[in-house]
Image 1 (cartoon, one colour):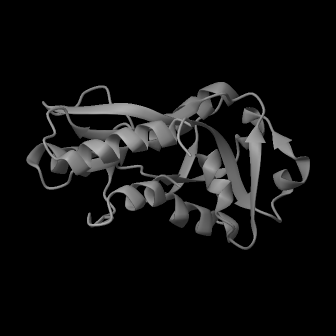
Image 2 (cartoon, rainbow, N blue to C red):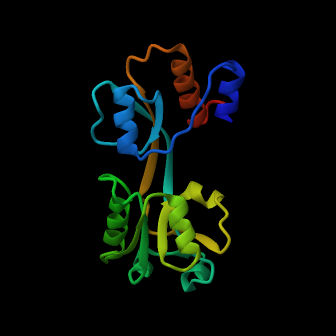
Length: 191
């Protein structure tokens, strides 16, 4: 909805969506190659780049619908102990490898990392085909891959965040308007 609102008020502005991992987005923002990014928050940012958390989500386990754990409705962290995991964004230093390690701690096991992929869609596709379990943000359950089942992990309250990133001293009125509208809309205050 936020993009449609922005388009109404800025009809002449062209939006180009470019997929990039968080570290590359932050570098591109710092270098002036892009104007805005949607990133996973970091401990440190390049000079002049700031962020605002706009979404917080719990994590779910995604698995093939025929998986024995899919019949339970919800699972406990320890029930995932003997599973093979598909890990999205594994190469990112602060990515989902940390979430999987936290799951292992909560369940008392060391996760078996079977597949490392770049994105959640790839992880879900592999999980739907029975290659393992993926731990994904709850919004991914809106992706209806045939054969996939999403379930809550009852005793695992680890959350992940998305942030809107931009340059602190942005001079473009269109970019400033986009950031303001995006922050309001993604925080639930906009329409």
